[in-house]
Length: 172
Image (cartoon, rainbow, N blue to C red; front, side):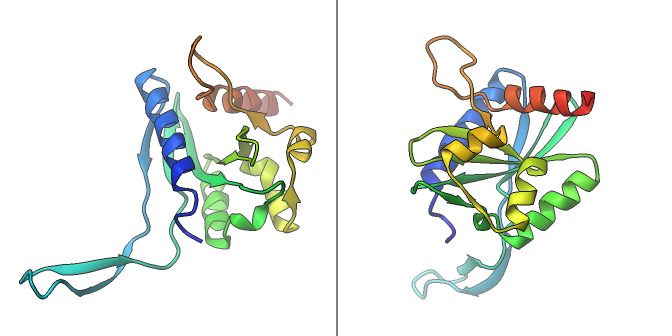
């Protein structure tokens, strides 16, 4: 259901804003297109109502040091996160982005409030099998944890672990 993870999306947006402030990232929020326009309020002549419906793209796109990143923010309230929370149209966008040299990721918060970075190349096989994952399975999978970048601040840095992972994958 759209909108369930709005608090987590705001945390992620704040993280991306801080990474921008640090000079590490430029990013833009993406929104589903307005598909239906209807009549507005009778008391406001000339007004109209735009309703966002249908299938929206992943949440955001960014670039860091020449690395293009397409991402979606997902929040999990239970012990298991279902990869079905990545919808087919989002997976298609992730695949297309990666075909053209970009990197796609899911920023995931689990029920214990732990924060994870799931590169699409790591997540896609699980998504294809419609699997769900627990925190211990994320650890076994090698999922990336957000890290503390500045002393005395919360763990807002998901970008450094992603860049480290990608450099290790490219070296293999």
